[in-house]
Length: 141
Image (cartoon, rainbow, N blue to C red):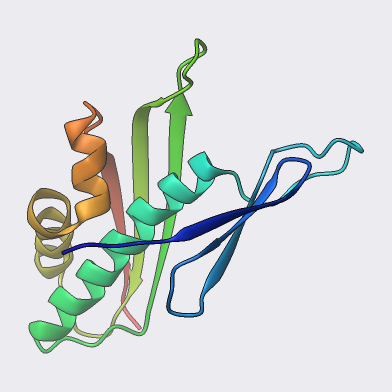
């Protein structure tokens, strides 16, 4: 499957990316030239993509087990190496699921399937030598 995006320089260290379906993402440096904080960086988007991709899998897998997902929040952190290029060397994901009927086993299996089989963003990390670790928090509700 082929994907395509158009990236346009917007001045300074700001770029816009159009996915061709009408969705635009803004990329900026961490700090703008005038000293104010910028928008998300490409590396932040990469980290967020792993969490969002996995989250989509987890919700889908749990719902396919005919369990209810009331809420799912995901916190992801990554550590980058000091030398350039400053690539990620580790990532940790904390999943917090609120469900009245999903079990720890259901939740853990959904995350395992996501990380080991379905999540392409996580697979990209793994091919780069980063095996994300994760923790789970299940709240009945």
